[in-house]
Image 1 (cartoon, one colour):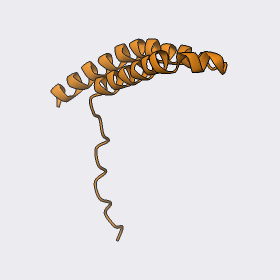
Image 2 (tube, rainbow, N blue to C red):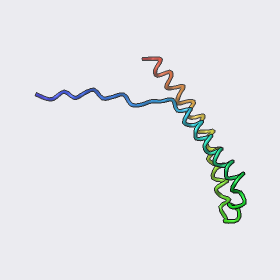
Image 3 (tube, helix red, strand yellow):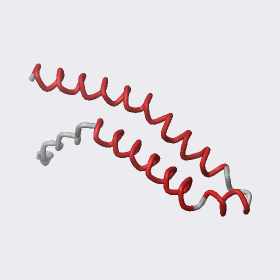
Length: 82
């Protein structure tokens, strides 16, 4: 007699906007910290590209935030249909 399998758990589907906002905040804080406290050191040692990396991470966070807002709206609609 075949053994009955336990039911599969539902996948996690947390709200994603807080993660996108946290990423934006982290890039902003790191970039501002580098700019205010370490700018001279970065320029002297040839690492000014770190500032540009923080800026790029912050700016790329906005399209990511838009995608996560759409994802969360679809998530709310899916849960409302249940």
